[in-house]
Image (tube, rainbow, N blue to C red; front, side):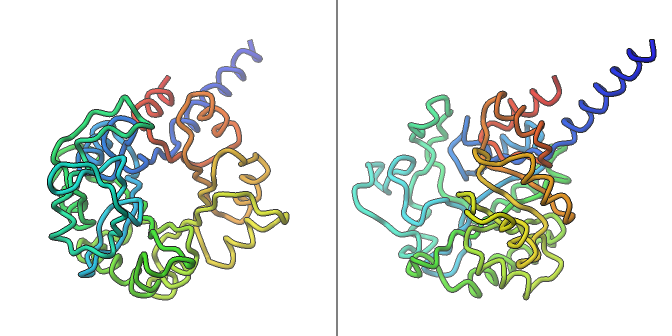
Length: 289
């Protein structure tokens, strides 16, 4: 009897810890909607995500827009005439008005054939994302967080303004909507995180990392050096020891982007605090089961 009670308590504890996992909708929910669009973010709110994950770039006239690639992605966007894009068009080379003429909702991403197209959908501004969430009547909208990536590369300064200008432009939009307490700033470009910490000490920061560092202890050293609250690594190489070391210093681990039940279960067993996924509805359903 005692063993049965202990097992029951263990299962309840396991369920509660898994269900408390933070679910971040990667680029909204690109498994089923065109990425980084208002329909994708609205869908993510409908299914009840904790956090909207999104990417930002800066236009020629200094507007913060939500798009992943420094060039308009020809796989997901059509030109103003509704034709395939055949040349490289940097976001940074276009004004907001020019950028809005492109259709980034009609094409289904070939990597996600189950997507539901949203014809004539333009690239949104960060301001428009915040406005949509504020106006939404969905329960998740009242408390949803925003994980905002600064898409800049030290090797390609032509893709974006300086780290200082980039961060100032993003923070100006965040402050306009009084959302600082609900925002995480994340980046692979650690220069932007350094600037953000100087400009806004209360802002939550997340270090994005693609490849495992060759030296032991580097992950914790990075977290301390940039005073980051979250480590967001590529899930494929993350170990339970990595998670434990980051937890020991009081920070959280939220990997990207596992999309299957097998990988979600693996991440939960490793002790992660959240998951960034393209398929948030299925992850939420998985956690409930």
